[in-house]
Length: 411
Image (cartoon, rainbow, N blue to C red; front, side, top):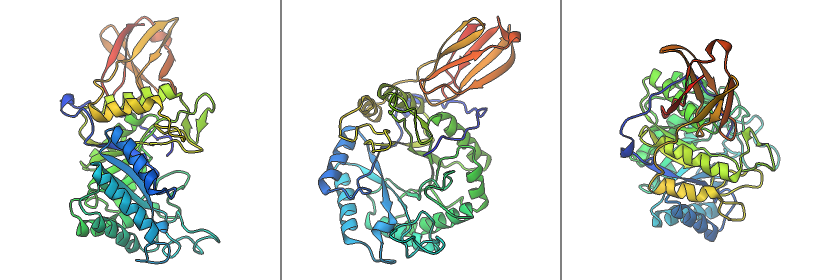
């Protein structure tokens, strides 16, 4: 995760027919059951919570180094047993897991010198893309017909190199994507393969991937956008369109961390209150209504962790206000987006807007459009802008590009 890079001036008109798509086709929540060596009972408990949320998917990290620690094809029986149980238990609850595989085992890593002493995994990609393809194909074959998708790796463009280290990232990521796609389609041609797993919405990394020939080797583009989620979706969609890429976008991570007022930020994300987290997630689902090109919306995360508070549940399992909001959103939907509120006083326009998008303030001299300001609201959805002297007294239109909803004021 990181704060998304956005193209603030990108504008994509809202799609028509909103009532035809009140919720995304694939919808759910991330769980960490396999990352923490959870018992079968703990896995079942998380899946029960996901079912209560009306989720039809859960997104789960598969540590390749834990699955195949001793060599190619030498899979750890205990890890396989937990993975088998998770997929079977999810299937029994009408949930299809969305799996993503990362963390190269020592025997396969491209890390210079191999793994450091005592380490069992590496955030460097494998030396051979075919090794990644082999484990992806094994997963697709073993769980044929029971998965929602396979997301190739995690955030290879992260600016802190948290998950995909080393040089030549676009080339190396394109190689494992192509290897995974071929292997998965041989095993289960119906299983969607997701490329990208991107955090950067400015399109720079995606353009580099296009240059490496990734088109034709995926079924959807996975993105992880926080804070200005909608502006980021709009921006990356424009980059895709400019390259003739009409695949659907899967929003496989998004959310807000409820660490305020105890902390100001976690990582690169501004803290909000638990109530604000609920409101923001509700705003996001309302805004996604009708945009069928956003095929999936997977909230990060089911439970809080020690060092982050994105969960719909506390680390102890207590429900936050966001749990009920997301349950309604994933069930029947939440209705249409809210409009901004705004007023002018003393040469300043201020107000509040729903979460996820920028604020636009358009200036008019009578009926003539004279300019526009673009603002990012604060963590509570509030904004304030001192009007230039030449537009004071003119008509103002305050809105958000994603929904097209606005309010008209006299400056």
